[in-house]
Image (cartoon, rainbow, N blue to C red; front, side):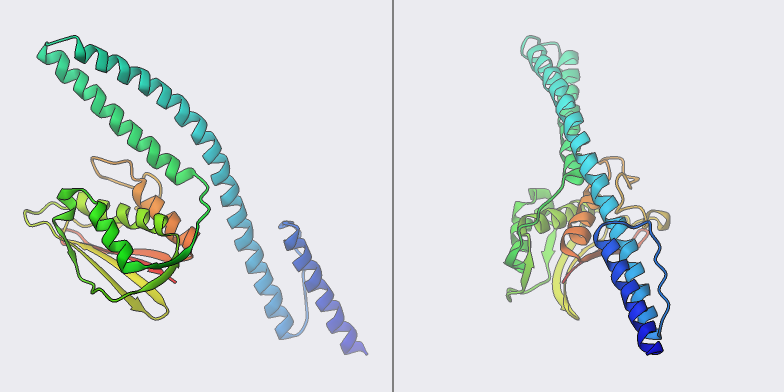
Length: 273
């Protein structure tokens, strides 16, 4: 009776802990003492509580950032449209080469700023993936065909035509992979530029490999490249890989990694379950 009562008390405490987690009450620390199995289950609940708390806080931060960013982007776009309109007007009314050069610079920078706003909104927006069965190799073929000609002509496909099924949001996966390919292209600094794209199975996951023979990544940058604005490039704001990271890690429960050696290029691998 004593042993039964002790076990029942421990189970009731576990039940209470689970109920508090379900209510999103992450601050109350409920101690559970019991047999080894009970203690293991209690520790597992604590780990789940901490992971869930971090996940919810991150989602709330992203939602707030998304709403704020949308408002700011709208105001900036309005101003950019006005500046662009005046620049086009000036350009149409002058033949002065100096003025034409400066108005072209203004328009180029407006285009660049608009691209930055689009990437920033892509990073902060709240996605709702629409997953379905897709052929991963067909998605790769579509990505390559949609790349700019300068990128497309240096890409080498290493995979065959065999169907490889995945359950993903095809649009988002294409966006994530395209960003990695574009990053690879921007790193190319040799006369003979090459990007190799492969696709294969590893354990229970599908792997997309994107290899370039570019400048490589400094060791101190490897931990930063998947974070917003984590770049040391002259061009670009460092949001492309951060967007890819969100799509793969947060929206598809996959993984993305990089192996790189300075001066010899990089290999990015995207893992999809």
